[in-house]
Length: 193
Image 1 (cartoon, rainbow, N blue to C red):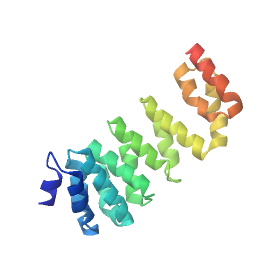
Image 2 (cartoon, one colour):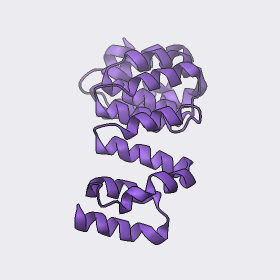
Image 3 (tube, rainbow, N blue to C red):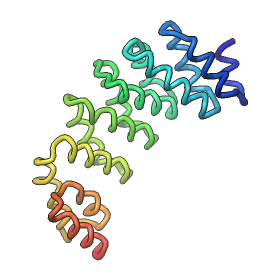
């Protein structure tokens, strides 16, 4: 009954909040099902907020769902795991498998989540740097800048000044540089790319 009400085409957000707020940790499966099926963004937002409130109690239920869910649900579950700072091995393994997902939105969230896990970051970043989507490459470069700034400056930074590299890639590499050289690299990328 709860599933049918929350996944109806028109649900008052206040009703959704009241219903979802009354559900506890024993309803995590139901909440994940609703998150995947609800047509209304307001309902999905309420469900995500409740799942966040339930915290670590949901990780064991959510981990297997990451690996087998449709793209939109997998993306939301990865966002949720990142927000909860979940480091359970089965969550990490599911996210690593989603790096190969055909959908860019899922790969992007998998990289964002894995970039927060020290042990998984290198594999995730290396895979993401080879992605065909520039947005995912930017996420990987951002993870490098945030978590390994010295290494990034030494190995990625020189791309911003390499005339053999396309303007777009030089622009992506520019955040790896220190403030002193970043502006020149971005200007060169725009002029030459």
